[in-house]
Image (cartoon, rainbow over all chains, first blue to last red; front, top):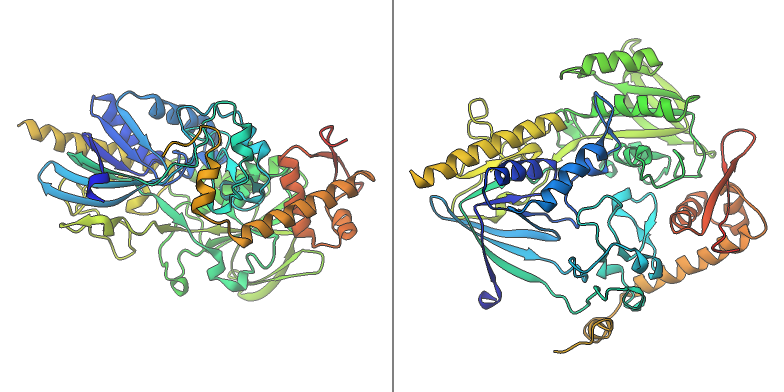
Length: 434
Length: 95
């Protein structure tokens, strides 16, 4: 194995190519540092690139993300490794880190693919599209999503029938089934960890009926339904294609809930639900939207006004805790909940339910550090060694944290955190010379 | 090993076998694709009408139909009188 490593050398390694990692990389690249971004997915852009609009301005998420992603992609000081994971990071000495990158085969030569989608058309397979959160299918030869970066095809080898139709259809012969795993040994002076978050899996709360009742969806599935690159022709129930007119939101699904092991607030589920409610009222003018909440936490700049705007638009807010969801034969859903204001248990009927899922840590990055320990906090997010004075510093000198890897936060805070991480990294790198 | 460009799938075929589940998934998709297209040849239908016609659940019908919409075999028509369900019809690609 040792002989198979290809050697690389950069100033900074950024682990994770979401909006936090991308922003940190861009800041460093703009002042002349050579940066490598290692991203496990097929595209950079993280979760933000898949969102519809952002709160509280209702700006289009893709319109903000795409130019930034394109700038990162084309920057001469940034190299991007997609479908790649870091398997080991060792601090040999101050300003000297050695990392091992494992790049999985994409079975497509990125530089030769024009993104023409002829392979997609030729592929006979249909499997769940992970970038549409399972609402629709995709091919085994596919472009991850229309604004992906790089916008080139990939072969999902686990679901490929090896029929060769994609290869025969490809006009540039960029599909290559001889590709194998590649390993790189990387020398860098500093590391930024921007591994982001994962969403709570609502299967862990069986009483909400997610997956059993197809008209119970997650907020990320609704986000996809609201995006211009949506899976359906409009907002529809996945259970039977009916256009919903009475939608309920269940806030704090999997957050502020000790019974599922996540006692902390997700910081964003109140606001993104309020945002989606406003967007739904625009998309479905006749629809009633009800938000079941414990407390509305509208703490950021312009957030409380945004909440007030939703109330004025007619979104109904019910202070209560949903205990159970049952399904009727027509696909409608009955929510049994405790109404906190009246102090009694009530039942309400809706034709679609959105579970506003919380934010959990993306585990595993601490395991790749060899020698020195990257400490985690009690909720398994990366511990900030000095959260008030230097929020980007970690337990290892020279390793910094950006974005939601350090805890739940919204997009503006993620960008701020990336600014802090890149400034700390710059300050660290400047000390090499002195 | 020298493998001819554009014919590299042979190389991998010799090295790995395709999972049975993958083959079954392909067969099942082809079957439902054919059934949906044949049913829509009779005229445009809503998801519940199509599901009843094909004797499958509305959720499976929705998933398969929306995949065919994405791939350009099906397009959206009018909404029904109750403003609840859209009618779906075949595109020129099929007719």
